Length: 56
Image (tube, rainbow, N blue to C red; front, side, top):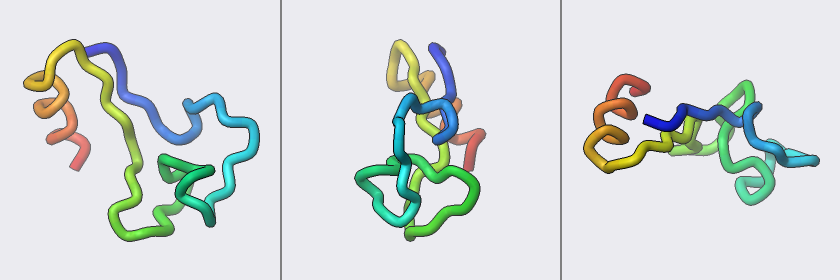
């Protein structure tokens, strides 16, 4: 696994929580149905699925 990242980890200058395009991961509050809260980066899909299962 490479890492698990939250909205605070993204290097975006102006994250607008009311716009999915300007805030791809939820920051403090999930504002949309199915708004992702973490991004999992792994070297293979099996590891990514195993780790993302822990985040649910």
